[in-house]
Image 1: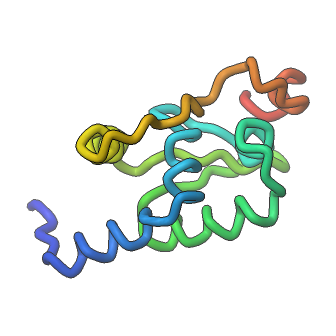
Image 2: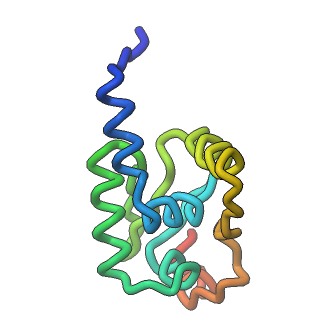
Image 3: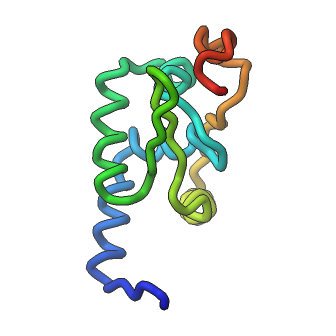
Length: 117
C-alpha cells in the first residue's frame, strides 16, 4: 500500500529543506551515509550547528540516523531528493558546491576507521 501525502506535506518538505545550511548538509550527505564529524570537516561548521539542522531534518523524516559506537551516521531517506535539489539549482542557474563525502576532507575519525566501519 502506498503512502499518499498531501500538498501540505510537500510544502512542509520544501520548507524544511529550504534553508541554505540544510541544503548544504543534504548535499554533503549525498547518496551514501556520513557522520557528523565528516560533515564538520566538509562544511567547516561547529558540531552543535550541524546537529541542530540534522535534528530538524530527522524529525521531518528527510534523514535517518544510525548509531555506531560513539558516532551517529546519517543517510537520506530518499536519495532522489538530491536530484530535485540539483534540478531546482539548474532552473535557477545556481552552481551547487561539491560537498559529497570523500576522504579529501581529512576527517580525523574517518581516517582512523572509527567513524565509517
